[in-house]
Image (cartoon, rainbow over all chains, first blue to last red):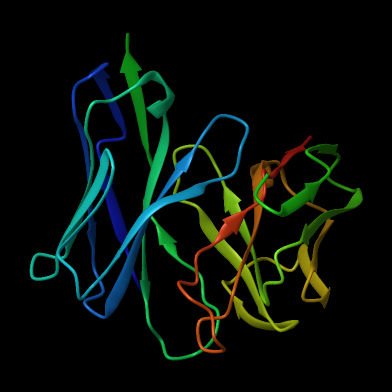
Amino acid sequence: GENVEQHPSTLSVQEGDSAVIKCTYSDSASNYFPWYKQELGKGPQLIIDIRSNVGEKKDQRIAVTLNKTAKHFSLHITETQPEDSAVYFCAARTNSGGGADGLTFGKGTHLIIQP
Amino acid sequence: ETGVTQTPRHLVMGMTNKKSLKCEQHLGHNAMYWYKQSAKKPLELMFVYNFKEQTENNSVPSRFSPECPNSSHLFLHLHTLQPEDSALYLCASSQDRIRGGVTGELFFGEGSRLTVL
């Protein structure tokens, strides 16, 4: 099955600086890579995703890059703000051709924005 | 508000108790999931239901018993749990990608925090 590794486990950056979180995956058949943000006391919420036919995707201050050859993908947050403080999870899914199926998640990165 | 509601938010139970977690989604999705979230571990997929049928059971111990009476409701029945089962249990829903869904994005509830004494 799929295995997703995520680094770092904790990341502290100054407000206004950029933050980068990296993930690797093991199954070369995986083709969908979402990123979720989990705030304290809440469930994870999708913030951006990328499919394997695209190398990069951007949404305002958030961008995700994908390197299929190396099997790794990264989340980039620019101009960080206090509300960016949360736990971020990367995930991967293989298009099995069937119906609903679950995602394989990384262990999460606790992002701390220092004022 | 994500459209997925979980109750109770907190539950404390003894190892011999029987309790249930409830999830309801108001998004019109046809797939529902249970995930377990423990400290320092990835979210672990437990069960998947698609159109009320269980399509995945990730080697979960039988002391966890899921029930999906319809596409909007999902239960997790708990019986004779162990202290190591203490965790945050997250319910999620999505639209089936094959039957016209878009991205298969998972929408999570806020979770039920379970403590087993």
